[in-house]
Image (cartoon, rainbow, N blue to C red; front, side, top):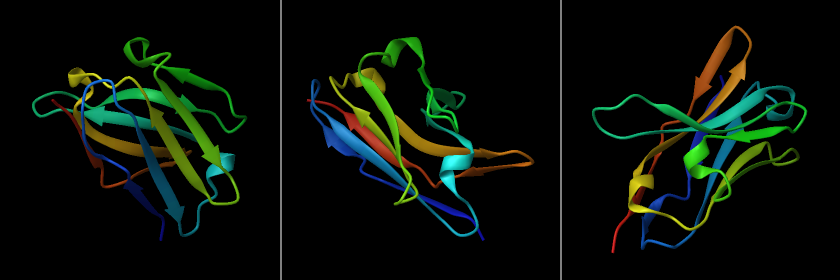
Length: 116
């Protein structure tokens, strides 16, 4: 059974940084799939903010480009999202996602709150 577990969220002041982690376990190898980080605020649709392909190519939603960095540690089977220069509008629940072809897997989410 595949499981994705996010961690690293929390309360941070504007301008601060966080590193989110998503550990994959079970019958899945992150490095062979495309993966991404999404975020969602209450009442709105979940949106993709960063994506990494199986080949390591990355792309970002415009508002986070230059502040967010997605990466992957293959031996640890872990996906990361480094978030710098946090803004109040970054407040959301952040989810990792793996696109394994016929199946898509989601973690349970980790809350990021940016407030002074």
